[in-house]
Image 1 (tube, helix red, strand yellow):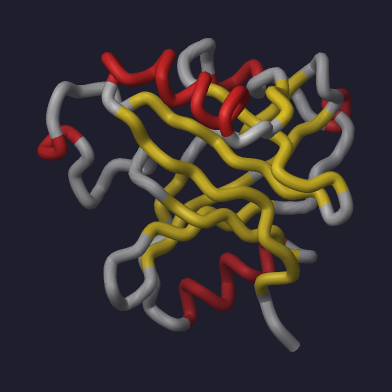
Image 2 (cartoon, rainbow, N blue to C red):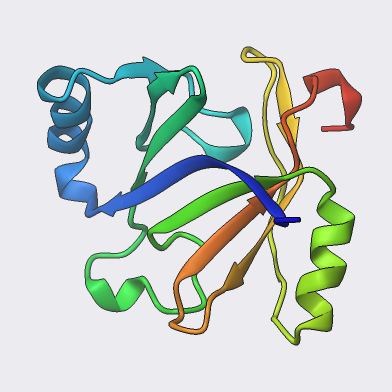
Length: 144
């Protein structure tokens, strides 16, 4: 049985001076519906609904530096794909047993959108960043 059960979102990075243009591009030209970003991720960038059935999001992240060098391999801010798993602890064990480094990050959550998701990152053999998340649960199900 597959460990990764569904795509959750894709994340693209843009330089700080292109934030407004990127938001307008995905909102106005592409036509994606803007979503409120999770409280845990701060105000910069944007989240968009790509599809409601199944639910799928595009996240526009703002690079914290000024050049491509600021998005080093060890940064969880790089472009990435995000997958949900049915059992986050079991997925973590499987990846650890395979010798993969688990990159720890804070959970993502939004009181307004009523969700909380624990998560971590791994890398595939080519160095591509994969975010592994539990299914969304109610905001009040965890301490914030």
